[in-house]
Structures are given as structure tokens and as C-alpha cells.
Length: 407
Image 1 (tube, rainbow, N blue to C red):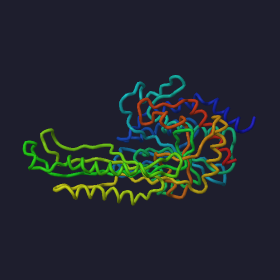
Image 2 (image 1 turned 60 degrees about the vertical axis):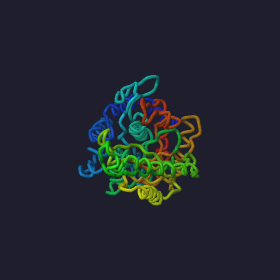
Image 3 (image 1 turned 120 degrees about the vertical axis):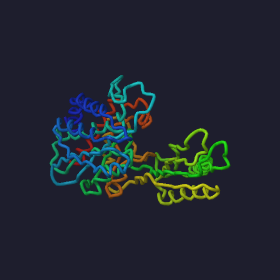
Image 4 (image 1 turned 90 degrees about the vertical axis):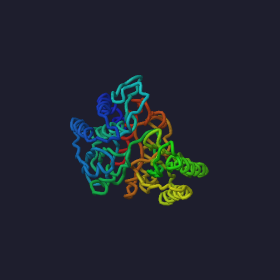
């Protein structure tokens, strides 16, 4: 039996334990917001310890966490050094958006039905805590590498941009791998992704009694005009196309809007938050300047109205770096053998923490457990789920890939 078959057999033999590991991770909530995620890190560290893997804990200073709008973050790092050679880092995030409505399963139950495991982060990306952990265990048990290193990095602020996860560890020189694989969400190998700019816009007028509307300046009407101007720009975005397969065009979305004080009061303040997705070909600085100009022009046409614009997030696009090809080719080769289908390398309209490694010149890809496409997983929707066979097979692909790169 060759090494690939031995790795597969080891993963098959320990798959029940792997599923139990994932269930335990799902059962500790990590809703972000509010982002009280240190308890999950402590639980994960204990589970890793029980498997013979010791995790270094990196609690982020409270002031930095609070400034980011979160409550607690402790990042985990497992370092396994085998000898001289490259370091491969596997990164997954434990923070998730809140469950929302419409669930037919317990979002934190880890229930299994018809070969699928259900729960918030079952697919993205607590699943890859399990994928990467058991791929590493299989590698050490079977291939016994003598060169290089593997690091497991589990972080907790990807939903808020990753600056206190991989970003913090990179800035403090705690990690600096040669190659990165980060949590996936489909069969594809992702080598590029969109950027994202998020802005908070506060529109101010003058509050007044609704019986005397002329004595006030309606901030909501002004906001409607600003939104109309922004959505007109969004129509223009549809005409711009990326050359990266899997990525289509830029887009703009207004996700939240709030303001006013009561039904019988002319609203004096309205705040909305927008999300602008940027294709890899766009310049983030130009995109932000353009949005600010659209808002400023609309405000200038409205007497008594002002608007403050605050950047919430700037996530740059991921572009392939030299050095990713050996990992891409290994995943494609083994993915085709394990899944019995071609595994394309392509882009995605999402944005991820991998971009942070790219900004430090570290090549990275996105690959892990997931269905054929991200929409099938119900990620960020009710009844998020993962086919357990996809978990098993992705773990086999990752273990085989590590073997190719380190043996």
C-alpha cells in the first residue's frame, strides 16, 4: 500500500473521532458580533491537547479587541517542526455570523442527519479546524516527515477583517510561513478573490415636529437621494468585468440603515453602512475616493444636510503570488483522484484572511472541506450543513498535499 493509500486508510479509521471533534467545536457558540470568542479557543486548545497537539495561546489585548467592536479573542497556534525546510501554515477561523432565523436544526447542536452535519460554522469554517487537524495527525502517523514544518493557526475575527487574527500575528512576527492554505468552502482551489470596502455614512439634517415639517431638515429624504446616487453607480458596476475566472463584476450593497427618533418626528440623523466589492483589477484608493465623491456631490445639492463618512473595513483583493503553483498542483492532482473529478483553480467574489498573508509576500490558496459550490453549504444562511463525505475526502486531499510538499 503506497503512502497516499495509507493516509486515506488512517483518516478512514479515525473519521468517527474527527466528526466528534467537529461536533464539539460547533457546540461552543462564536457569534461575531458580539465576538466573545476566547471561550471557544480554550475549548479548542483542550481538544487539541487530547489529540497530542499543544497550542500556543495568543490573547489579543482587551483595548484592541474593544476598539474592533468585539469582546474577546485568543488565537491558537500549533507548531510542528520536523527538520530544515519550508513551513506550511494551515489557517481556519472560528468566528461566525449569528445564526439568524429559519433554522430547522439547532445551530449549535452538531446534529447529523442523512450523512450531513448541521450547525453554524459546520461548513465555514470550523469544519477546517477538523480537516487540518486530522490531516496533520495522519501525516505524522503515516508519512513521518523529516523536513520542514506544519503550523495550525486558528483565529477568531475573520468576519471583522482578520486584523486581530492573522494580521496581528504577522505584524508581531509570530508567524511567517513559506506557504499558506486557508479554510475553503467548495471543491475548487481558490487562488484569487475580491476586495471589500465597507463605509459607514451618517447623514445629518435637523430634527423637528412632524406637524411643522418646514422647521426641520429631513435626513431620511436626504439619505434616499444619496442612496439613489450610489445605486446608479452600482448599475455602472455591472458593465465592468474581471478577467479572473469565478469573479464577475464589482458590486455595491447597503446592508443596514437606522435613524430617526419617533414616528411623529422629522428624522435629524440617519446612518447606513455600505459594502463595496472590488474585483482584483480595481484600485481600492480610487474606489473609496469615487464613493466619497458621489456622496459629497449629493449632499452639496441639499441645503442643510451634512454627511460624515467613516471607513469600517478595507480588505484588499487576493492575487496569485509566485510560489503557489506547487500547492495548487498537488491539491488538483489529489483532488481529482479522491473526488473523481477535476478540481479547477479559480477566483471567488468573497474575501478572506488569505489576503493578509499575500500583503506580507506569502503565497497562499484557499482549500478545505466544502460542497461543489459555496451556496450548497448554506453558509451564512439557516441550516448550514456539510456532507461528511466531503469532510473525509478534503482531509485526505490535504494530508496527501502536505506529504507531497514535505516528503
